[in-house]
Structures are given as C-alpha cells and as structure tokens.
Length: 126
Image 1 (spheres, rainbow, N blue to C red):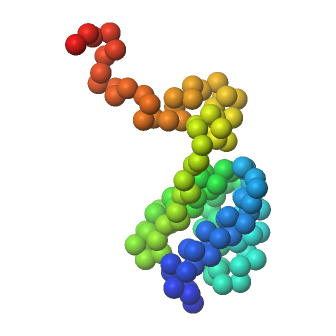
Image 2 (image 1 turned 30 degrees about the vertical axis):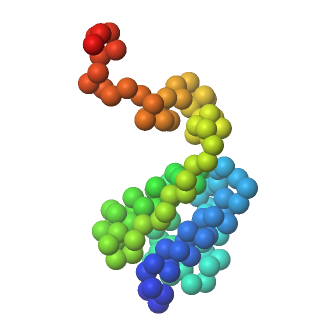
C-alpha cells in the first residue's frame, strides 16, 4: 500500500460516511462505489469489500463486517480496524429498533445492559 495503513483505513472510513450521508441503510454496492471513488484506496483494500455479501447494511453493520474481514485476514495489527460511530439517542429511535419491531424482537435485546445477569433468578428473594 502506498499510503500509511492508518491513512488508508481513515480514507475507507470517510467513504463509508459519505455512502451513509443522511441514510440509515445502504446497499453494499453503494459503499463499494463510494470507496472506489477515493483514488488513494488501494485495490487490495477494496477487495475486502468484495468479501461481503450483497444487501443493505446499517453503518455499524458494514463497519463490523469489514472489521471481521480485516481480522480474518490477520491484518488488524498492521492495518487497524474501522471505528464504530457512537449511537445517539434512545434505543427505540435507532434503525436497529425498527428491525427488531419487524422481527418482533424485544427492544431489550438491543440494549443488553438493561437485561439482568443470567445467573440471577428473579423469583429468589434476598
């Protein structure tokens, strides 16, 4: 790679941000199109995107998927990982909540911190 590895990851992060500008979900081909517009991104990094299945992704999902490819290739030490943006607002207002509603999953699954620890039995009085 011609740029420093961190600069390459930063360019990919910027391309992802551009692809998601004002949108909750984006098709992988759109992420690839934005990434390929960045002339400084080497072809071997764009190949990481080719390993991901087609379909619509949320920003955290696409970042997680790319990071999984980087880890699977053993490049996390040399290349680094993408940063997952912080989710703002209550869990009910996030795109994941809409998917949970479609899948009839309880919102508690989106916020594991709100679940009681598995080893505690709510029926036992202390």
